[in-house]
Image 1 (cartoon, rainbow, N blue to C red):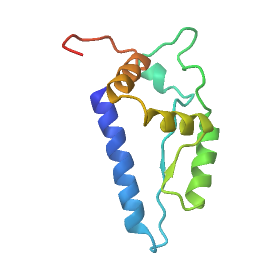
Image 2 (image 1 turned 90 degrees about the vertical axis):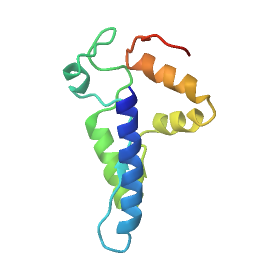
Image 3 (image 1 turned 90 degrees about the horizontal axis):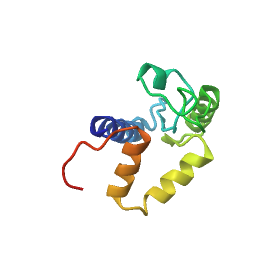
Image 4 (image 1 turned 120 degrees about the vertical axis):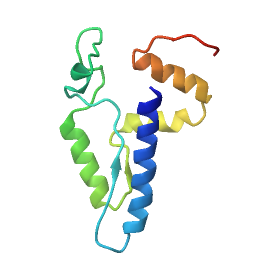
Length: 117
């Protein structure tokens, strides 16, 4: 989970910084930050859920792509493609980071490996 979270943060921050550097050059960059997307990602990763290999509430790739392109052409540097992603991002700011990390680990199906909380 640590590597996954760190890489997502890196890509988001790098993308936003490069997007600012590209302003005025005619080149646009928009980081798309979706929640779960209904692809074979989870199956390939060996993840299964109660009834499927795709988590409930996963958005379609077409929905994510359309929202990402709309954000790109609107000149945005960051896209949270669907409303629930905006809600999640908003409320996560007010929750203790430890709680957020535990919930993310639970969502990813990680077992506690020991150590102190």
